[in-house]
Image (cartoon, rainbow, N blue to C red; front, side, top):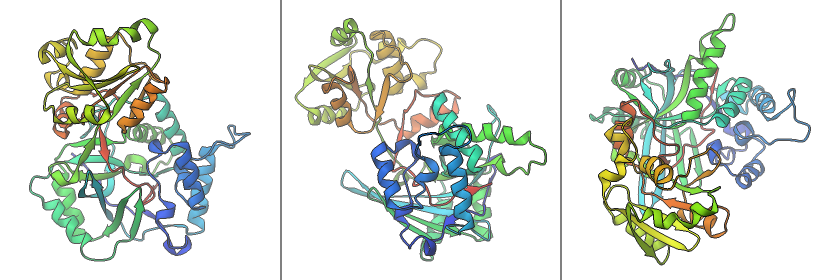
Length: 426
């Protein structure tokens, strides 16, 4: 059973922060580079970046560090009513308006609490592997703040459209509690407080499977933290639920999925010199004059397992000579659905089998911008880059339902959820 419940969220008190909600919000911690972190710090003394991605300082140790400072700061902001807890339990309707490739879009969903399941017996299905260091970082933080500072991003399927009708009714009924612009995206938040609306949403989703779109590391950390808390004497159960943003994967307007490209380094000189020759065994290789030509060919290909590749001597478009032969390189321990993923073929067939390059943690950088991938190779910081098409949502669903995991960073759902709209304080 999928158990969703409303909660008394902790929201910024606009009267105590000068009224500018945009100045206290931030993107998720894992997409904030150092320059942006500095800008967010400068934007407001109360920007949520100070909680989710605090600065390391000279002299930090076990008794004073960025995690402990975040815990103290969260308590201080509550005491000063910079952040104020709602009086009643709500679900929070969340709308994001944005433009992509000249097309105006709007994603609509809601934020609530989801009961954390046990591993292997959970209705919230992951699709990506996680890494150790990010989980250690987030566990250190949650232990100090004792809160969910940003939501997990999850997908459900409601082919009746009934949930969207409830959310649209709430969003159209009054002024939003929060309005904020971040990186060109208009973010709005409303409280859904009616028992009828809350209970209907909970009922519809009670027997549905959910899929993690973003936040795999934070969800695993939430489960680990729950297990730690359960060992405490007098534990009140407050960490048994995690804050989640839910949106409908059946509504095509709700989802924009972008590609995540790869740049690979630490390739030996011998392998680097022979990459193009080895690729020609399985691919037709077409030289491209520039990135625009390459991405145009990739977007129009309409075929499985086409890639762009960036080498020191130029850009190339790869078309598989035999799709089945390429997928068979992966081996027999994966499902046909998993082998259909471009990212699976790239990591398990192209990198590991054809090029004999191991996907070692730290040797691969994941990039949304193809131009950045090209620059890393031309600047000789990385040896080769691969440009990909986006992973379709139906492939994510099919693989997750089988209990299989995609390679790291297989999907990039745009736009990212804004952090600071609402906090779940245990």
